[in-house]
Length: 226
Ligand SMILES: [Zn+2]
Image 1: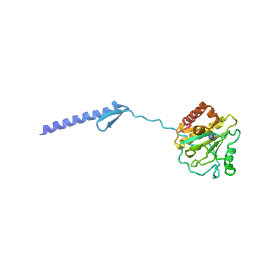
Image 2: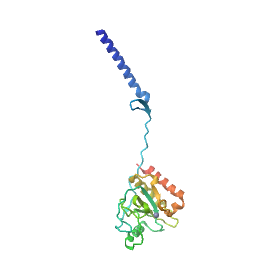
Image 3: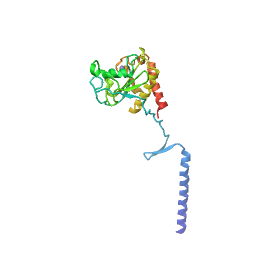
Image 4: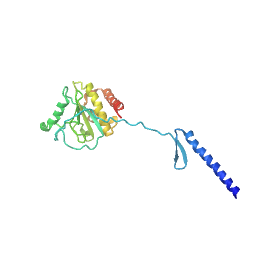
C-alpha cells in the first residue's frame, strides 16, 4: 500500500513538473503572437492589429460670434437634423470683409431680397465671424442646408482665389469642424458639388486646386491634431 502510494505521488510530481515546463515555454515560443481558442475546437495564432488613432483638431481658430437676428430670410431658427458635411463657398463679392458680408445677411431680414446666409464667414485677413449657431440651419447650400455646416470665404479679386490668410484659417476651421462632428475629408464639399453652381469659383474652375485644398486639410489634421 505504502509503496503504491509513493509511486503514485512520484508520478504526480513528474506530471506537474512537465506541465510547469510546458507553461513556462509557451510565452517564449509564441512571442508577440496571441493564441486564441476558437469555439473550443482549434487554436489559431492571431496577429493583433492596432489601428493608428485618428487625430482631432480640438480648438477652433479665433472667431467672433455675431449671430444674426432670427428672421425668415437668413436665420430661420430651424434646428439642423444632423451634421453630415461641410460646404465651402465664396462670397462672389471681391474686396468685401467678413463683417460686411455678415451685415448683408442680417439686412436680408429687412430688405427681403433673397434667402441667404452661412454659419461662418472667413475674411481676406483670415478673420472669422460666426453668423448662425451650428445647431441651426443656414440658407447656403440648397438641398444640403438641413445636414451641413456652411463656410463662406471672402475674396480679394474676381479670380475667386482665397488669400493665403483665408486659406490657412479655412484649413483650421474645417479641420476643427470635422473633428467636432466626426467627419471624413470627403464630407467636405463645394457648393458646386450640390448644385453645379460655380461656387467657390476658383476651386470649381481648377479642380486640382480643390483636391489640393482637401489634401491640405488632411495634412493640417495630421500636423496639429491630437
Ligand atoms: Zn455658394
